[in-house]
Image 1 (cartoon, helix red, strand yellow):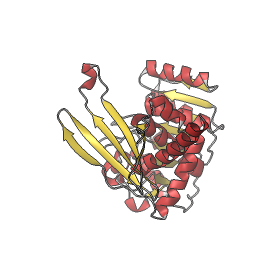
Image 2 (cartoon, helix red, strand yellow; image 1 turned 30 degrees about the horizontal axis):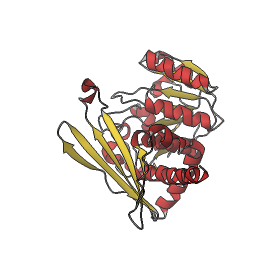
Image 3 (cartoon, rainbow, N blue to C red; image 1 turned 90 degrees about the horizontal axis):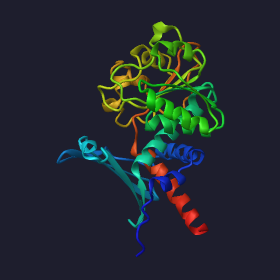
Image 4 (cartoon, rainbow, N blue to C red; image 1 turned 90 degrees about the vertical axis):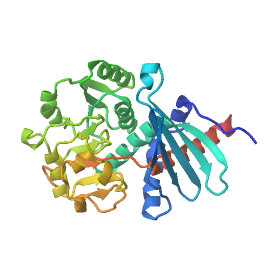
Length: 320
């Protein structure tokens, strides 16, 4: 039996181009609506000094398991705090097909889901972008939106000037017009100029202005993807409540949202007004209520990415 291909980070990136990944994830929404794809709750196992997270998902063709280990003391020993792989299997036979770099899969599928949400929900999906944060997810989201060939101007706001400038240089090399705005007080003015907003931080306090700043409009699309625990939040409560009140609030999945979405939990949102991205009912128009999209993550997005990676790897292998 041939060894299972174990793809490097660069090889995993090459297998997951954003335009194709968005199309595959759009198809995954259809599979979820039809009950042809599913994922159980993730399993957390305590390890000596860390945690093992196990996240399986499957459809009729492929099964995957993402394995993530989190050891927060590792950096002091010169090791990575988070390590991850995605094992891709043939659902019918159990045959192991691929192993992908889990960090790359997570970053790219998260950004692709946000881009898909913007294409479906944003009043102006090709508008300029405000990016709050300058880490891995911020970079992935900027690259995803630039790949859409519409967004060409990006404003970066981050509390870390070094990473913000490094990200700006990287995006300029891709032809983007990039501005770094370190002042939180300047964000209301920035929001008068941009229509797309992505927050990619692990903040425990809002990183965007509340309604009293008077800068929010119905043309805004806000994607909050950084906060992943109940005690975390990036969005002010008033913004979330306004979007929910006017039925302009969506989440990537309802699976686990009441346990993990601190942005919604701390806003005491009416859960009857929270709908998933796969919901086909159109948003209601409103001149002053932005569209708010909250992403909590879901193993079926890893499944979609794995389907694309399997197809791309098979094609490039046969061509070689």
